[in-house]
Amino acid sequence: MKQKSFYIKTFGCQINVHDSEQIAELLIRQGLKPVKDAKRADLIIVNTCSIREKAEQKAISEAGKLLKRAKPGLIMGIGGCMAQKEGSRLLRKLNGLDFVFGTQAIGRVPDLVRRVQEGADFIVDTSLNGNAESIGILAIPGQKTSAFVSIMQGCDNYCAFCVVPYLRGREISRDMQGVLDEIRSLAGNGIREVTLLGQNVNSYGKSFGREGGFSALLRQIGQIDGIERVRFTTSHPKDLAEDIMFCFAEIENLCEHIHLPVQSGADRVLEKMNRRYTSGDYLAKVEKLREICPGICITTDIIVGFPGETEEDFEKTLELMRKIHFDGAFSFKYSDRPGTAAEKLEGKISDSVKGRRLKVLQALQDMHTLERNRELEGGIQQVIVEGASKNSGSDMMGRTRTNRIVNFPAEPHLIGSTVSVRITQAYLHSLRGEMLSEREVFQCCCK
Image 1 (tube, one colour):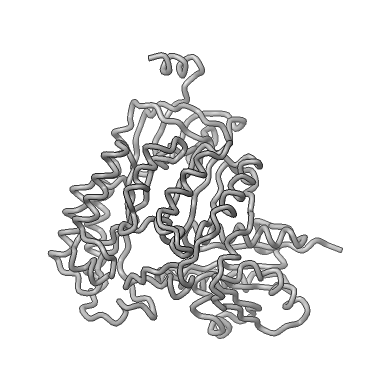
Image 2 (spheres, rainbow, N blue to C red; image 1 turned 120 degrees about the horizontal axis):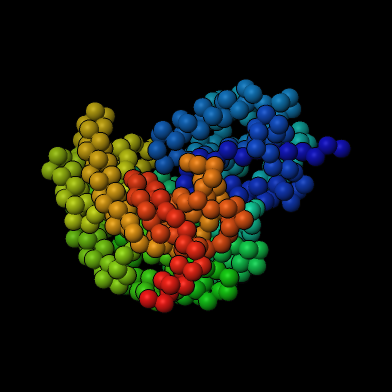
């Protein structure tokens, strides 16, 4: 009998990417084979995002295209945040859809597929059962040196613009021993870098009554043999305590990079967003981070055009950016998300104004990013070689400890190795370098 095959299309953040890795692992355990061409698949799963309206529209459009091109007898399911939100309504939007599964139903996907194969009608599984069982599935990436590890799911913050608490449930932390065991298994399978995932990793442990749980977890991971680098995302500024900040100076394999979403530089807007910190609070934490760990890379998220945002408010955001000089920023125009507090707020900003503000903000950030990158020219960075460069067939690419992409001439056999690279040219989105010889590395170490 021919082996059944599957194809997964993923939209959204790193959490969604890891969700898809876990779904793939479960399907492989059932004897299915992953394929890169959707036209060859017997099962297609679309893993969606709902953080912005544009992401939802893109997922629906792509799912429709996949259905039209699919082979006869295809089974299709849609999961993720949009599936959690829309549920059975997706049946009306996508003719031919077989099942919908929510954010806490990942572990049940094989059973949903089986039920469809046995003749079940359209299935919807979007229950939020209040446990973290679905995020403990061990998925070892093939031919990779890095892996994601979910340490928690859900969120308790209820920021006014955000749908996550409604679509991923309340905050639940995984048992620390389970996290450590997973990372040891990854290390035993050749993984050298792990990225810890959660909507607010800084509050890890609070759901089972452990304050300071995240810094304790980081220190435990720092002792695991074989793990050369540790990263994490995302951090909520209000929960970034000093014990976490000191980890950057005290844990050797914790990379000098933090993603710390500010969202706005105007206190009035931050209060309406329910962020529970001021711009002054945020700036003080950035200054403390740089005091503890000079050279730390700080990236952020910023929303422009939140309801009621004035030109003065927007200027305060630009002012904060000029003070901090972020290494990078993900910036977006505000869009209403159904069910959130911000959806009901008055003072909606026109799309033209939001577009103008976003253009100004991104131009400023591009200038800061390029300045930060140029500071690295002439210096030497430690880079884990990840694979072939997208820019040149003769180059390899990897990332620095501060999460910058570096392209440089090298041979494929170095994939997975850590090499020393001298930065020769800085660009907006990447760095160019040349790998040091063993003699040059020795000379640098002797200086």
